[in-house]
Amino acid sequence: MILRGTLLLAMTAKEKVLQRAPHWTEEQDGRAHRAAQSDDVVDEWGDVSKLHQASGAETMRGLANEEQRAGHAPW
Image 1 (tube, rainbow, N blue to C red):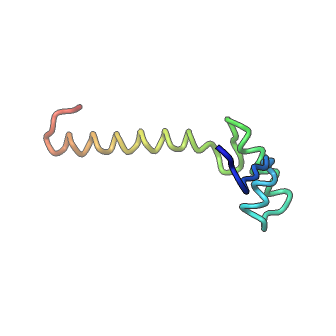
Image 2 (image 1 turned 90 degrees about the vertical axis):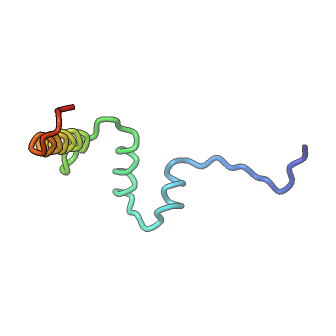
Image 3 (image 1 turned 180 degrees about the vertical axis):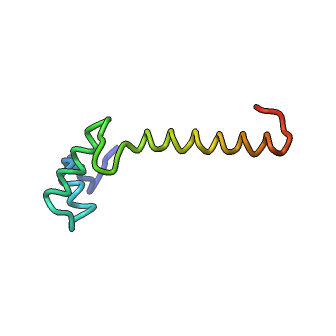
């Protein structure tokens, strides 16, 4: 099989970011790169996974209470 006109170039993560978000500053690029590499990032916004767990648990408690008030058996 002959491929004509196909040129594969390896791009760095920084090049990909610059291609997709050319208006970002160096500081924004650096912050995004650090966040993408880290599994347990907690910043000034807080820990999203803990917020998600808490809100999910609160929702489930609310649903269980509504079902109980409606006379349904607990699940």
